[in-house]
Structures are given as C-alpha cells and as structure tokens.
Length: 344
Picture (cartoon, rainbow, N blue to C red):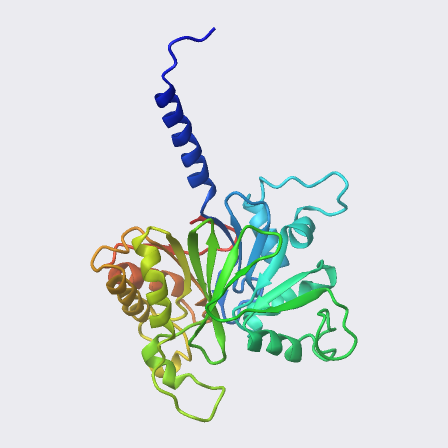
C-alpha cells in the first residue's frame, strides 16, 4: 500500500508531464526534396512537411518528387517509416502513394510542378491545393492531353480523376485532408500569381513562400498584364499577419527563397530575392513584432538558390556568406540541402 501521497504535488507533476507531451507534439518536420531553383533537373523546389505528431506528409511544391524522395531515403529521412507487410511498394513508392496526402502548390512554373506531373502515372488519389489561378494554370498548361494526360477531375478531355483541385481562398484557414495541418494562403510578388502559405499545427505555425520578390520591386515584375502597377504590399500584409504570432512565440520558422547574390541588378530579379532584399523585408517583420531582438532565434530556411553554369561560381557559398554578413536580426539561417530534414 502506498502512503503519504501528496495529492497537489502529484496533480502538478501530471499536469507538467502532459503539458510537456503536448508541447513536444507541436511543431513541424520538414524534409527537403529539392532545394534549387532554375535549371538543375532532379533538384528543384519541393519539400515535405508533417506535424511532429503525425505520420502523413503535405508536399510544398513539387519541382522534384521521386528523385527527391530517393535522395532523402538514402540520407535516412524515412528511417522511422514502417511499410505494412501487405504493401507491394518499397519506401519511395510507399511515401509517394500512401504518406503524401496532398500537394500545396505556390504557382505553376515548371520548376515547381514538374515532379508532380512526371510522377502522376504512379501516384494515388489526393488533393492539389493552390490559389484558384494556380490550379487553373496547372489544368490548362499540363493536364490537358497535350503536355500530359489529364490526371485531374477538371479540365480538358477525358478526366482520369486522380487529383482534385482545391482552390484556396485568400486569408482563410483550410484543413489539409488526412493530416493534422491547416493552411492559410496569401498572394506574393512574382511574374505570375504566386502563393505564400501559413501552415498551422496545434497553434504553432510555419510559413512557406513560393517565388517572391520584395514589395518595392513588384512594379517591375508584373509580366501577366500590360499595365504598370504600384508597389505591392503583399509581403507587408503577411508581416502584419505574422507579428502577433511572433509575439506569442508561435512562429517556428520560414521557408523562403533567395535566388541570386547581391550583385544581381534589381532589373534582373524578375520577382526573386537577394540577401539584402530578404533582410530588408525581414526587418519589417521585426519592426511589426516588437522591435529589436523580436526575431532572435527564428529559423529562416533558404531555398531556390539558382544553379550557375559559370566556371568557379559557388553561388550557394556566396549567398550563404552574404546572408551571414547581413544578419543583424539574430535569426538562424539554414541553407536547405536536398535529402536533409529540418525541425521547426
């Protein structure tokens, strides 16, 4: 028989244990399937994200899919995955068909969707999430029986029906089917309509940005119309949305592009970032979030560094050095690397 139990102490200990358990379950695991932008096929923008307490993934863009899963498997990213005995697939097939429950597409440029299109004949039924114009572009440009068979349930010709388009309303939360995640979409600045996505797990959030340039250069990248427009406030609106999350310690990290080094002229950016422009934008978030030091320790994952064919040009190292030199915000810069996992 157990004697002398201090009931208040026991209850406090149990509450502390369950609080820690719940806290540990929040957050995100990110697997890098493709970290580059531009011309290097086999390593183009694509990430998998899952809630720490979940087993299923959401794909963030899909420039590289099967090759990225293979690289990640070789690096041990799926060591925790147990394939059911009745499955006829290996790790790559099982991840693709059974563990990826949907695709969240920022825009329909080829280096962000080619992996999805190519893998579609071996994929399973799932949703494609994106802004309405992005889904429309995917349907009209690729799944049209000219570039590729129509594996979706909308669009031209016979509809195979494997994919279902889910148009995301701007600024409204949307649950991701068969995962613990929710997503809220915002437009950002690029040569076509492009999305940034606030992804939520039990109150914690991370943000995945598609290709985007700074607000103040947006009037030079509007290739979709003939009219000139004023400088955008798209990123400013996102920073305003995120500021309370920063103050509440709910923002766990950003995945955002830096395509070119600082030496690239503004007129040649076409809706992309350099290190200096990224930190100008992040400084706005810091100001909105309480001022100096408010972003200290925030994880900023860099993606979409453009591959260069020039002899002796290590663009990744140049950009990494420039980012570190400019980092007066105390953020943690992480250069994404294909096949690796990142905890947010």
